[in-house]
Image (cartoon, rainbow, N blue to C red; front, top):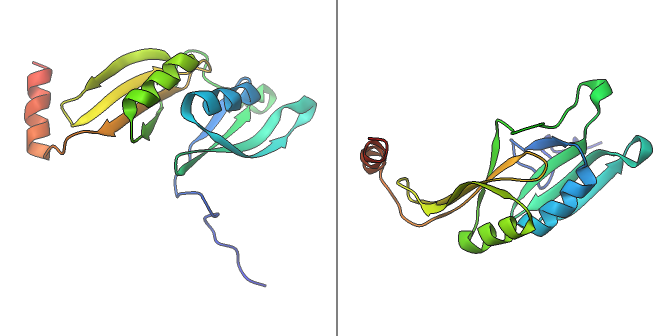
Length: 151
């Protein structure tokens, strides 16, 4: 018997796993907002989602419904974590996400670190940043620009 690969095909060593109140609705939203593709879904009691996996670009995100009886809750206001998406066309990705219903937390702009960047919150209280690299900035130049930006 051959030993399976300890890191499953299509996954990375770190894979986000979101708990969401309304996971099925979130999957539909992520398809619309971020072009996600649903890869798999395992249903739990009452049609809830016990485990699902979507792909956005070349990365997977796992997700499940809340199971309060097991201490599993989604964010009620704002997640302390943001999922960062690098994309080819951040202007189009930003417009698509906002059109789908994401709330703008930090508007799309060119940043001192060389990205065109925005921070959004989805209707399920998870934060997503979207960006495209528009300029290579050395660590020294980035530090100089950061000091200028925050002075």
